[in-house]
Image (cartoon, rainbow, N blue to C red; front, side, top):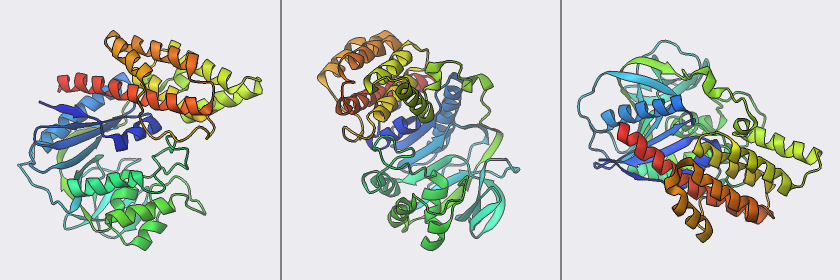
Length: 377
């Protein structure tokens, strides 16, 4: 029987990226972390990811953090035998695959990861056996703790940086975190593997130094799986067809555009954020996506004032609304939005506090989704 919890230090990354990121713990203390764009089909991918990760993790007695992405779907042609994993190394799962565009590849030597390849560029040395970087990792407890500590150390930014109003880091779990355990510090700091453009000054350099300092004592290795029917980002086109204003407000660029247009129209910040929240409330988005969009909009409208959006916060008014409305399905958000529009958009500090209260609402929403998904596995 799976029990469910949310890991606070990673939760604001959910809000920053607009992806569902869940952590589950099972009776043998393995942990599954999953992330997915919010849509009906990607939730099917998420269910499939839970099943795959559960099958494999249940064969190991090791405690730690299991991370799996839902951007791909695959089937196990055969289950591996029961196994134990080294506690001083990150284990990346892989399988031999034909060249697939948009993928990274492990460079290895005797099952140890010595580098990576992406888009024809290499960092590190080793044999290339067409071992695809599958979005499936195992971090032993000690490494997972070092990994999570980075959230509380400078620059303490998440992928998009929206939660703390600092420069986005946009670091890759593989090309920045895992790669730091495979190569020398100088090579790690100068490489830009996986970056879409070359830049003269790397704004994430200090973050990468911090990563290397925390993870330099560890290494990385691979486990090869017998996989078939691998598909990557095979989403139906309609999943990403945003045909309405409410749907287009699910990303930072869209929200910034709306706020800029509001200024041109002569609207105050209060009027602009009121218009955006009203549109979101009336829209048909997924519940969690609506919460994310509203929280992000409030943070952006504060224009860096009013304090840091550092994670969920509690307030008796919001708690009462959530408890009363929780059993009413998606409509329980209406009361929360009404409260925000009436009392929480008068100044930047209140907008930031409201954004944090929405993160608490998102935790409840995620918990409900996890319980439903686990019932399907």
